[in-house]
Length: 312
Image 1 (cartoon, rainbow, N blue to C red):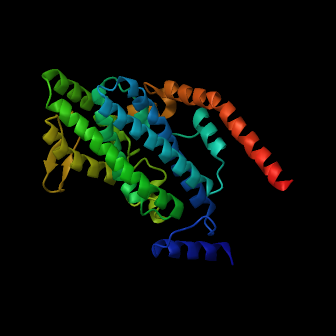
Image 2 (cartoon, rainbow, N blue to C red):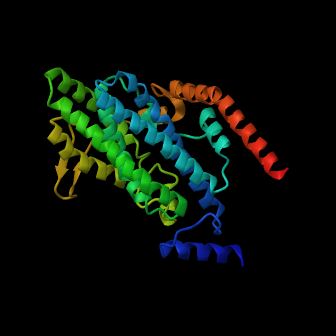
Image 3 (cartoon, rainbow, N blue to C red):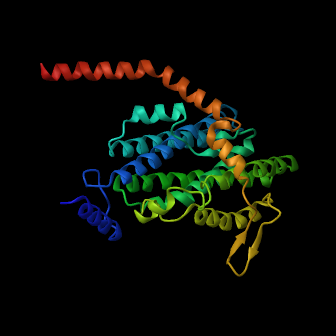
């Protein structure tokens, strides 16, 4: 069978909504696109544990601590699911992680902003996990089977994360004036980075068109961003928070909210490693890898010893 024929049959399967599985033939570009996207997603789950993990010991009460601990644990699990999905494409997990440490591979830009107050934790749950869900629900229908199946469980847990964040903010917004002000301050700082989570504008995105053709993605960056803004306005109104955008207004003709242009210079600076916490995040992940080396070595030695006993 010629390369052209294989590509034609592959695209036919995509159009018929037949999942592509690890042993199926696929174009190398499709494989590499998936490895890039899935590994970036995995890195984001792992790095995303850092700003929240820093608040576990400082949570205001035992209930909040238990909820936050469960959330951080979920994020670790999501990273493992996604690294495993990338491995089904032939990727080496250790190499993927090393690529993140060297800056060759990226993770979500939002995690390069600091969580300064307890209100930030609620805002991360509401806005950051809300933005993630907006993107990830569509990924439950992505064309690559292992990725789609992993996303089903991840989305269920992310929905819990968003609800707990919103509930935490609701408590603050109905508390003292100082607590309400703290929630508004968190909103002011995280609103624009949350919009940046959807990636560059469609005009600047180099992967969207092909990813949509292969049904890796179902919607463009700008479509997802618009859906997120539309959904967030009423949620902010219920909380009594003001979205920090003077140009935010309903456009009857479009059936959507208009909003200001994102500061793309800031976005690209953060993506390139010059954000408030880029160096801190990578340093933390490098330290974690070094500190855990003895565990990996012990596990490998035990596995080797057990294999030798079985073969004896």
